[in-house]
Length: 428
Ligand code: CMC
Image 1 (cartoon, helix red, strand yellow):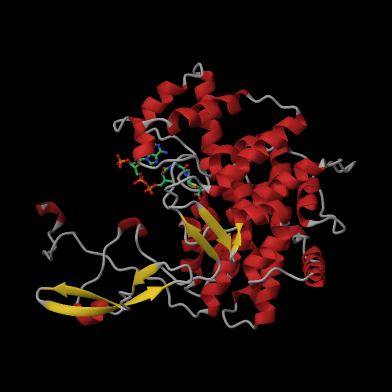
Image 2: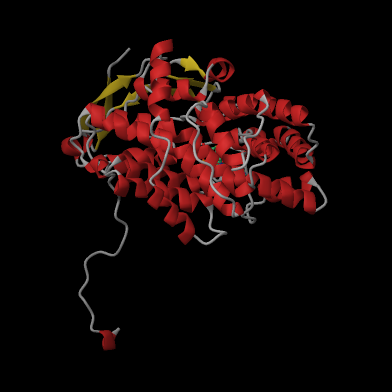
């Protein structure tokens, strides 16, 4: 197998190294191409561009495979807890029992947020979107923990910043929810595990703890695990590129949260439920909406369908669909929106438009139905995605720093006006 690619431009040949990953993925290294030839490469939307070498997540979109640090997502969703997966992603290995206990303990020491941060909540209009609040609050952590600003922090100092963010995120998310209801916030209870504590702060009352059904707690673990990383997607690339300027962790993650918010990315989980509701209110005719999605003159897209890299079933969607059935059965919920989702899925999977384009349900298609069954309002869904994605973003930020990656700075092909002289305003 050749380890070089040969590129010929205008009769001149250039040898470009071939890079092979551990799963035999192949890439042509073009990093020196401009110096050699004067040419850059153009790939709008980075559809075929590797931005980094990463040892965190492996994704084979053609075969519907997703591994975190080599472990299949199916095994992690079945056997692991969210905090264990967070440890795996950030530190590279599954923790031994005592290491996990120590990690849990360390996290539980940092769950409180500074009391002054409560004032931010008072300043947000009551109907402001939780994602805007989350991005602002996570960015604001840098103001309360200025030691995080030091790009030359020791590993120990950097680790403390990481732990603080992981520990405070559930508190921030649940407080955003409580404030949206006008209810008093619930303080973290450090004797509870990460997910249990989050659910208690979200759904518990100041006057009483709630009984949490193990099926619900497990479903929450699964959802968070399935969202925990997904290699170089829009928000993760944002986190890495912001971090590459030596911006602090809180600022980098805040930027990732903003990137996730868009309906083509994490915001799709909210958009899916809104779409299913619209279809229901419109009489439930899924064929009509499928036709709209196929009509190139109609901006409507089938939300929760299609993926940049999965050209086969999204493995996360398969697991979520099953978890969704379990939760609805356990809670005895009969959600008409679920019937519409199932009809729509079946119709799309048998429609040549979707088949030819390899458009399958993605992670967001069924996650919203579970979140809704658990009692979360629609505009909190993307915040839950962010809570799940946090360890992945942190792991990617950390890896980018360990690898001492250079500042991210793409090239462009300028297609604007060529030089021209300034014209006085009265002569234009
Ligand atoms: N409904 C109808 N047509 C679609 C859809 C859809 N959901 N997705 C893609 N297409 C069509 C698209 O119009 C294009 O058709 P043509 O070749 O005739 O022009 C073709 O499929 C390829 O689409 P694309 O936009 O070039 O693909 P992309 O890789 O740039 O976009 C996507 C990927 C996820 C943004 C897109 O599939 C989409 O908008 N899906 C709906 C939003 C969604 O569910 N997003 C969540 C993604 S998973 C969660 C996450 O990790 O972010």
